[in-house]
Image (cartoon, rainbow, N blue to C red; front, side, top):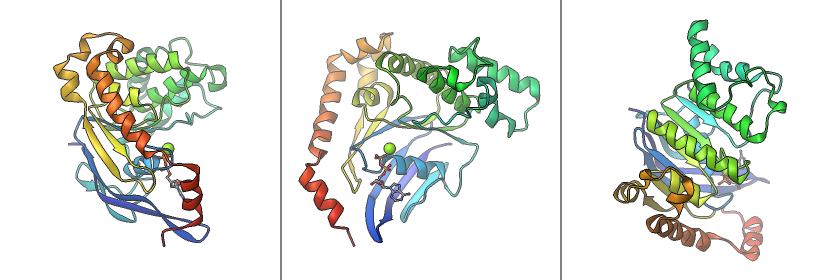
Length: 275
Ligand SMILES: Nc1ncnc2c1ncn2[C@@H]1O[C@H](COP(=O)(O)OP(=O)(O)O)[C@@H](O)[C@H]1O
Ligand SMILES: [Mg+2]
């Protein structure tokens, strides 16, 4: 079982000698092999949540568990894809994908097979010996995703992984992610700015409030997707045109719009700390 659970998680950060409450008693879970997306205003603590599941950041109070165990450090059961691709510029595509695999102590032929399969899945054939700077942004992000998938982790943590891509490439990547997760379902926590993307990809969407981040609502998408059989459509735009899709998207948009803050409020917030 590789579920992720946030239980009453709060986080305080210090800035200019004052404490700021960033996350306020966040409680939600990602079930084993479920795809959960988080949406929320910029600065509400989405990345902090993901870093906590990754073991790169820790709660001030509350608990984060993966597979029932408190997260104390990064681990090979969890792969992280950041918005910044974080590829090694001095390594080739093959070497970048191989990097995490090496630590697993697999024999060379097994590693080569697994890399070849990911290269094919991600459409990177012919680019194995290229360096990141020779690739487009979309291809670099494919390498970053291949590098995570090749480890075959139980848990995938993705922080706006398509945020830097152009609209066309983004759609292709979304379709590939959907295909991959049908073939090989994983427990996924996925952060995005794009409501469309969240509703398209996720089983459930966690909507957060502005800072200090709280949970506004958790929207159940999977029952609608199944009832309306969105999967009968091959193309993203056909799904996004469905009335049931538009309905969910609008519902989430309205909540987020209510969370936008005015400049006056922002000024107040930066001049008045919490404690
Ligand atoms: N290590 C840190 N030290 C101080 N403040 C931080 C740290 N990490 C994040 N923050 C602050 O916490 C808030 C939430 O950040 P983040 O989780 O990146 O939000 P989001 O991903 O939703 O935009 C921001 O105000 C950010 O400046
Ligand atoms: Mg972020």
